[in-house]
Image (cartoon, rainbow, N blue to C red; front, side):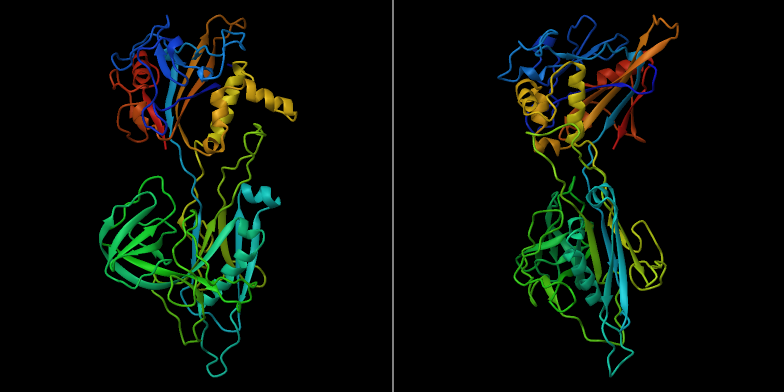
Length: 537
């Protein structure tokens, strides 16, 4: 090998049933009998290896998968190399030349959520300027530069009777929020919401156990309302009360999580009203009354109607000037910013491998500036003058870049097919798309659906080399190969390797278990190859 990369071969494995967690792999079938997508291990004579009954040894073996051309409706008459329905085989894998075994777990994307609290009253007759920067690939592709905007909010004239009184800071928060959401380009990337503390209450029990999207909590305070934001006790960001259960129970919904959160049954929870402006705060005319707010990151409505009173979502009326506005640390009003955008994607009919898809999350940075743009000011706004990862804002949910998205797997499958001379029509001529429909691998065509392109996949990877013992140059050399087995994220690591993860690895041994890749790890261990399986979460 004259470079440090590896030839990549991607196999799309399947569960035994749709949405299931059991890997479709055979211990008895001949290579010709493998069904579409089914995996198997075979010795040098292509005899099947029952990996559940024997431990891996030093003998070389093959990794084989049933061809997706065995799907109903496809014939075997369009191939010139044994037929497209012939099983897909790896290079012969010598265990002592397996240099790395690793598992790459799928990772769902997460939006960045930041909050900017204000902990005091604001000076009258003063303009407060909040600068918001939004950085990342989606913003750059949208405008060819990062997004930024300075939001000016004038607090209003001083009281003639009490000129030393300060202004309600919530009015400024709502004003900033309205300006962001009214921006024709900014509101495509950031959703702003304003919140004011309502009440704190202690929980006494979990009425219905937490799922990945909701939980029912028994509380001592009955003044909570649907539509109110609720925080504390391990609830995810953007949790809202959506319904009341009898007089002491609340249903809390939140954006779908990868795993159900651990919600504290006896914690103290704080609720906040979701605030909207009347048409008197300098923002464009918007009639909010009667609308129902939604939970950011979901399609769930909160169940509250925006009203002037009696609802968890309110049209806000600023409080009168006062000598002071003071708040405890968990009860400060705050502006919440959630990064979000809807990516434009073409469907199957015109898909090409060069279509762009974004995986980089947006990043929000907030600062309070003066007329000169100086961001190092000391106010009771956010963490100023201390600047953190989100500027003066507090990051309550870190952005997470997606890992194992179907868009990537699809392109890797197409590349693997091209190594095998499998046709994939891809061009500007309509005939190429028609030939794709006729000739393309049905496994690839299935992956091209938007549902599968947006789905998440785990990977088990085998990195091995094939030595060149007779090299004309006289230099001992190796060809390096990376075999990726991609599976829907419903299929867990335990279907491949038996053992517990410690410090990011599963230690191999001569006898590990009966999972599919246990045989491979045992063989590598016994032959002096890779001694452990890396787990990349």
